[in-house]
Amino acid sequence: MATEEIYKANNTASTSCKSCGAPMVYKAGTNLLVCTYCNSTQEIKQENFILNEIDFESFIKTYEKEEFNKTKVITCNNCKATPTVDENLRSMMCPYCGSPLVEENIHEERYIKPSYVLPFQVDKIKINDILKNWVNGFWFAPDNLKKAILSADNINGIYVPFWTFDTETFTDYKGERGDAYYETVGPGKNRRQIRRVDWSYKAGSVNNFYDDVLVCGTKSLNPTILSNVQRGWNPKAVVKIDQNYLEGYITEKYQVDLKDSYARAKNIFIQYERESVKRDIGGDEQRINDMFTKFDKIKFKHILLPIYVSSFLYNNKNYIFYINGMTGQIAGDRPYSTIKIVFTVIAVIIVLLILIMMFR
Image 1 (cartoon, rainbow, N blue to C red):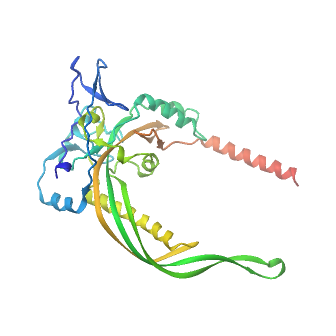
Image 2 (cartoon, rainbow, N blue to C red):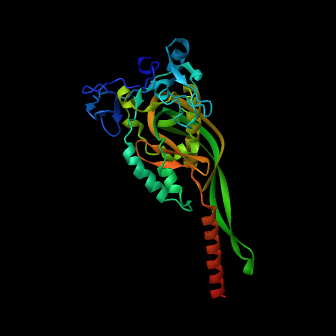
Image 3 (cartoon, one colour):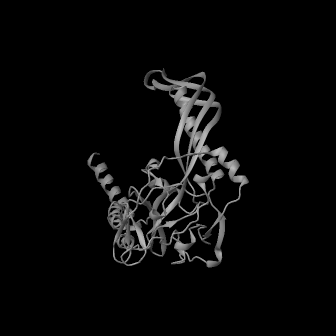
């Protein structure tokens, strides 16, 4: 239980500058804390550690029976995010949607401590280049969109809660293998080939091991945009949780608990198993009539992964975007220029008409 104790979240700077006494924050992409006033630096000492993954079933039994400390969080009335209290009391604005946070919504919750963190590698200086490259790649963008995006000043670095799951699977199945062939039918000009499938019974079993399947622990992020930026994370690159890496960033408490996260992971495992069964059946097409999967050696860990969250206002509408704090991958919503789309369609139609007239 020691490795997954309840986490007392606190993002206020716990380290003061030895030169001037001002707060120090983590400098992305380094192992340094930097002073917010005089720019002095201090090295973060990294401990040697063995990446430990916890037995899921044993932990659930123990966790349900024992009493734990609680930590303070504040819930956003608009998007239901639960960022840690101390960081957000400085601005009282939600880092996800920008809505005002109400102090009366501060409450205590039970909390499983994250064991590991993937520190930010992309700093805010690099973000400007990332935004420029992103907007320069837009098709049918309104003329003043670039200015709107580059003026976004509410870019929040957030350590987002994730769960990782490992398991070994054993699946027995019954199904059918479809082997395609082509048959020539019809006389004369109507002679043609028709694709047909010869089905045969197939039964068997597959055995797989899945490692570090990620399940997001927050409901505050848009899942579609998140899926486009979370590629490239390496859960094996995490370091042991250290408050120094959290300094200057927001840490969110998970909203999807361990049990619900495992249920989501289990659905992912089953999808993977279906693909594995189809490969085992072989042929050109496959039918799975019956499938039973046993899960064994289920392990998990709770980690924090880095994401920059921001938005920009265009024509009185808010558009959100996320940046992977490790790889710099960016994705988000954006407006389109109706005028540019219409003129492009008209131009294409004119070109097609000209080509038709030329080859008549």
